[in-house]
Amino acid sequence: MAGQIIKKGEKKWLVRIFMGRDRNGKRQYFNKLIRGNKKDASDYLSRTLTEISQGTFVAPSSTTLDEYLNEWLKNSAKQKLSERTYTHQVYCLDRYVRPKLGAKKLTAIQPLDLQELYTGMRERGLSPRTIQIVHNILNRAFNQAVRWRVMVSNPAQFADKPKQERREMQVLAPDQAAKFLQAAKQDRYFLYFSLAIDTGARPSELLGLQWKDIDFEQCRISIQRTLEYPDYSNEFRFIEPKTPRSRRSITISPLNMNYLREHRRQQAEARLKAGSDWQAYDLVFCTREGKPLQARNILRRHLRPILKQSELPTLNLYSLRHTCATLLLSAGVNPKIVSERLGHASIVLTLDTYSHVLPNMQKMAAEELEKILFGEVGTLLAHQKEKAAS
Image 1 (spheres, one colour):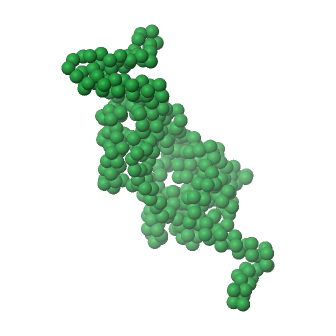
Image 2 (cartoon, helix red, strand yellow):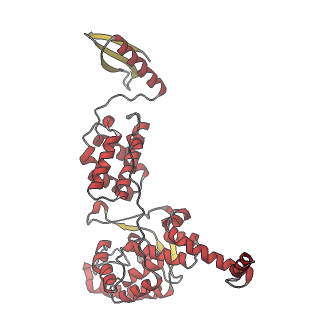
Image 3 (cartoon, one colour):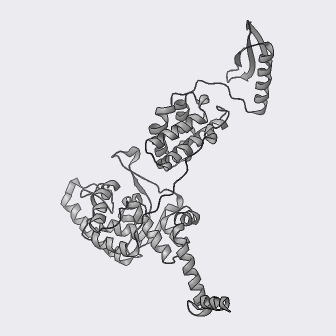
């Protein structure tokens, strides 16, 4: 790697470094004008040659953050992410990052710029989780920029990421769940609510359920797709489940299977009544014309009114999934089975998400072990108390 220092005027020096040839064989140079004495230019040349030899040199560029994010999304993120995750990341960048930092040069982005971005989001009332998501996206994008040699370092690594606040999980207790289902029996989405608690399926998974996914003989449903509304619009699409383990088969209660049979009969009548207006998506849960449903409408028009009328806590649709997991774990069901039912990527995620249930499980485990060893609950504890008193 060769370098030159060329005098360009009073205390002006051009540092010129040969960078090789392009695809057409044309010689390429890196040029930098240094203001000062010749030693300043010489020191700069020496440092730059060292960085080039070590593979840490990044040539200055006028590329903006907007332009770089476009390249990163196209050539990196889109190849690695699911369609749903990719769409959400594009949405977050467009809404929170680009308006504030998009016009800034990529190489000029500093940790303080990101800190100010996060602070502004917090002051606007955005949740720590949303800010954390934005931070994680930028961190991955800047890491790739370093690997592509268009940035020297990742500014996100030096910014204080927001502390993740673990919100208290809202679930229904056993008696509340029974009360809720009893109150929901007259609602047209009763079966949706009942299956949500029975299966622990995600709201989008139940909305994407088709009749071909139902095994009436074995009392099982198969999760094969989710119903999504990308870009937060009214346009829908069916996509693959969240993770490979999300594609699963779930055994349901015989009672819910009977409800499904009756629901299919009623839907067949509605299909005949709708005639040519019926939209044949084969959906288990759909509008009166067979069209896909929107979870937000079920939440606002059905779930929340039922909860309010029953004087139960305010929940969202995901809370029914959490209720399923909590009820099963509290009943002593093996966490591995619960994890498979929920379609979690690993049992570690299940245990971490529902750690609040573990103390009760430990107590149950101790009582069961005591039954095995001593025949009845309380014997071991009584023995320990006697020993302590003597």
